[in-house]
Image (cartoon, rainbow, N blue to C red):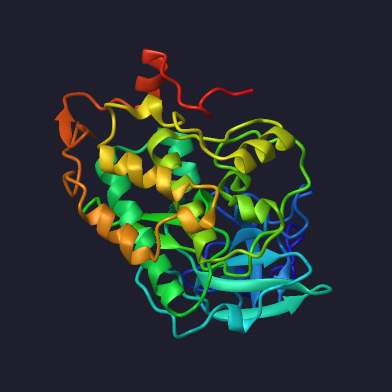
Length: 345
């Protein structure tokens, strides 16, 4: 028997260890599954999972929190609409293993070629949400997370797999008992499908992490991942994109134009010069001018002279601690030295 608020069975809601997914049966006040804005909420997939909460929308699909109908477990499921090339099992080679790369448990189709990708549910938040909530990351945290992301990319590239969708919404941050952040990269190697929206409201929009060659409709390559990694590094440090524009056409033109020689001038004195040089090389318009393979990027990050972790109450700038945590973007605005992309159009 199904309740009035969602199609999940009453037996599933009473399953030991599971909270009900609809508010009618929930004492914790959880919102109903069904929503006029998202018809997928409350939907049962393959007779095994019920979608209960939207966790992260994206260019190539939406990630939901889902409950198993058969076991007292929860999962993250990415729903991908039909497209010219949907993912298959070959896109998620089980031989690729890395602690910072989320496993894929299952892939199946439903409702006219929609694809469901079942992954473990991590208790944390996406990098996009964290930066939106707290602002730019300090230098030490950025370098640690960048090193973890690069490690996951290296494992993929060594197996000949291109990720193809690297952006803040595809990175989940888990806080370990020690208080350290642990990065989980969602495996999304089937590429991107641009959103039809004309306006771009936020610098964490996946569009700003697309390489110039992908904007030109070319297939993503390992060099494209390297470019997206550079855009991600810039985002973690500044909470924006060097190509940020609110209109898609202007943003496209900015990405295709590439960085100017003085594009990172506003970061002078705030970042170690080797890190600025690395970022500039990662964001080169010409794929052949970007560093590679990923081992080179990891070596460059390892050679940066910054503390492994930031002391409590401090932020890191140029390898030194300053007494009060001051977000990098706030310093730039205060000094009036806004690198290209910090101004909204």
